[in-house]
Amino acid sequence: MMPNSGARRRFSIAGALQLWFKLAVMLRLIELFNSVQGEGSHAGLPCSFVRLATCNLRCVYCDTPHSFGDGEPHDVSTIVERVAALGSKHVCVTGGEPMLQREGCISLMTALLERGHTVLLETHGAVSLEGVPDAVVRIMDVKTPDGLGFDANSTKFKRIHFDYTNLERLKPHDEVKFVLMGRRDYEWARAFVAEHRLMGRVRHVLFSPSFHDLPAKDLVDWILEDRLPVRLNLQTHKYIWGPDVQGV
Ligand code: SF4
Image 1: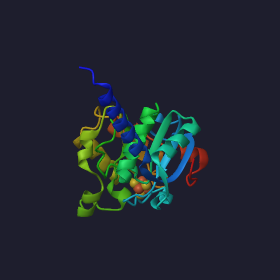
Image 2: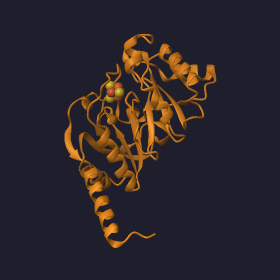
Image 3: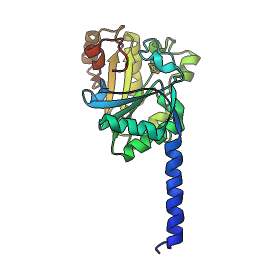
């Protein structure tokens, strides 16, 4: 049965209000810029980066400590318009940890998808990814013991490094990344990949050498020795602009 015109009107007003509330949600923004994606399977593609504020972790190698601050409040619609003005199809929502601003982050990603963007979410996966739209490509950067500066068996590491419920939320188009400080991290990541059967579950498992700590050649040797079907992930933006340049 078709709804009558009154019901249709009520429905469209409710829909419009819902959309307005979604777009009016505030996000704390650190920076928004155009560049090329430096990592993962989208490396080399033009991409707009939306860097959201704050992070609850403190990785030893963190290259974005400027994201730890409060940022500037922006509503979702303003960010969507600024992204549109940059003209890239791909948009990477990153941080800090973007999912610490759960409601706004989900509204932003939903609005960007509705505008036809391909949306990548860079997350450490230590907070729940519940509610992230299925079409978003999750790039989940699982934190290793040496990356966080803890013993692998310590209670604190086990408590903070990862929300294991997120493994069930991974989609076949997603990517899981490990940034490795050295051999101990490599062995830990290798065991994690096997234990949680990551190969075949996501599009790519990425092993990335921490830029200042692990020579890429050593990592390549280990991957080949072990015949691991993981993908070497280099942060190409650091080779183009240098390791300490921000906003590129
Ligand atoms: S999760 Fe990312 S932003 Fe947070 S401390 Fe680690 S590297 Fe830095």
